[in-house]
Length: 229
Image (cartoon, rainbow, N blue to C red; front, side):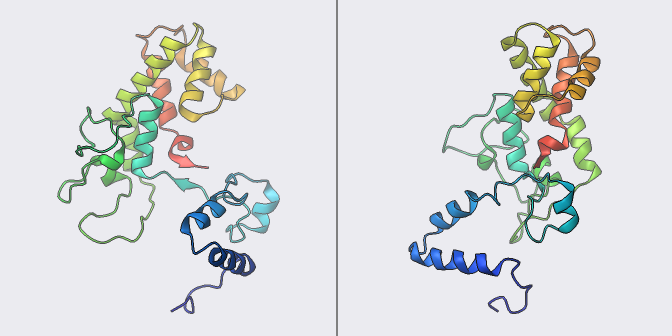
């Protein structure tokens, strides 16, 4: 229907400009994608000052990025990357994502129509029995229970903690700093550092101390790791 039944575009001048330059670039989708993802608008954070949020509460004018839930596959690969266990080998047979020994990227995971992987079933993977144009993101208690009790996450939290303990000088603060950098890709704030020191208590780089595993697991289960901001 050429858009006649939908809402009017929020930025018609920008749409016209992109359409004209898209034709001038030989109808290259690669050019169009590069132009969009290199723009300042695309690279915004979801965090903003109060004024833009007050003026544009629904973000119709794209004053900030919309917070986005990581897809199940991307979340799993991010966990494996943080624990340094991700197998980046290309090609080859697929494997069940429920298999603890399966460390390849999720794109190589087996998709079963009859019994989907637990991760897919809980985190909005489309129904493999029918055509799906897009995913409908959800936030449910079962997702949080999975993050707290998943053997997969417990296993890789343990491996992440072991890697950090093995490569970091002794001292609780240094280990906490490295765990944050390894998992959340940033240093902890003073408040977070204080809370983490309280959590690990007297753990001073002892690889057998479950406190470090628990801290790594807690960071993996945060919204900051689960969402793109």
